[in-house]
Length: 177
Image 1 (cartoon, rainbow, N blue to C red):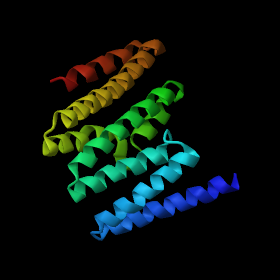
Image 2 (cartoon, one colour):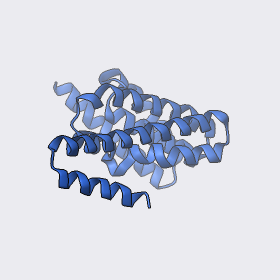
Image 3 (cartoon, rainbow, N blue to C red):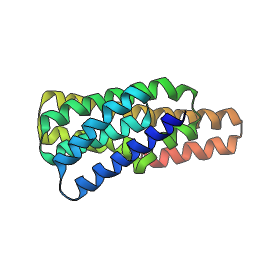
């Protein structure tokens, strides 16, 4: 247990170092540190945890800023696969609030990755693979949003309050105008 706590501290310091190098224009150094840290984290914590996914997502941004679009594509696919597997394995047992917190944690990092970053990278890279990843990510994010809306609708209908149901239906109708 103590070792895992120490490993967590080391990984977090490595991440801070990467950010510092990156923000000061040393992309190659940030990439080097991150690519050394990720296997360490994976060996001891697995690659199916939020910290690993977040750091891998950051690595995609580092590669993008360095102009290495082949690495962007390779790592973006990996992050998207890790993220979808993570969500599929955990979302069914999470409450709506826990899902929302996960999806929007780290200043909307996961949401922005699927809805903004991947489509942007795909347009810049202009490869079929990048476009396919971006398309899949947009569908995935839309599916999560749709599931949340369906869950809200089911809760309102289950409540049995006719006035609340009518107001919710009116709200939905007004959104489509």
